[in-house]
Amino acid sequence: MNIPQGHQAVMPYLIVEGAASFIRFVTDVFGAELISRHARDEDPDLVMHAEISINGSTIMCADATAQYPPQVAGLFVYVQDADAVFKKALAAGAAVVTELADQSYGRSGGVKDPTGNTWWITAARI
Image (cartoon, rainbow, N blue to C red; front, side, top):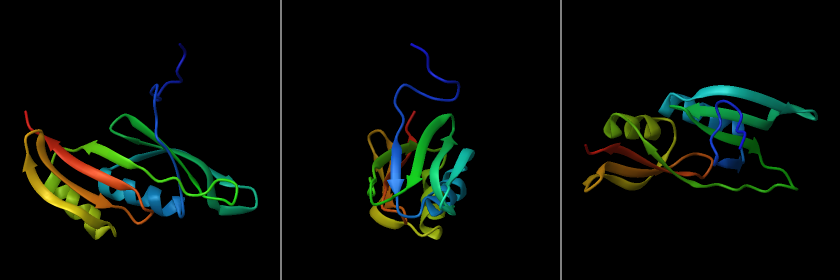
């Protein structure tokens, strides 16, 4: 099987209202790196296709259209410091889904980002 460099066998593809806002959120909160961004011909402010990387994991996204309505997701993300990242998410406009708490698998809490995706922010217990 041939998989392009920087990609995985399975990658989320999120179609959201406000892809530029989504990209800004993941960059500010998770330190994501924007790999590529392609604008729509009819409106350069709209994202036709973008790829971001969070610690080597690629997420693709695009702005919703009449043909492709929003398709948000729940995403589980490991971070070094769940408390710090949770605070960054709230400061970037996320809403609390579940408060941070110690779980058997680590410290974890859930937020909903401004485009409707739910992020389970987790620092693993080792």
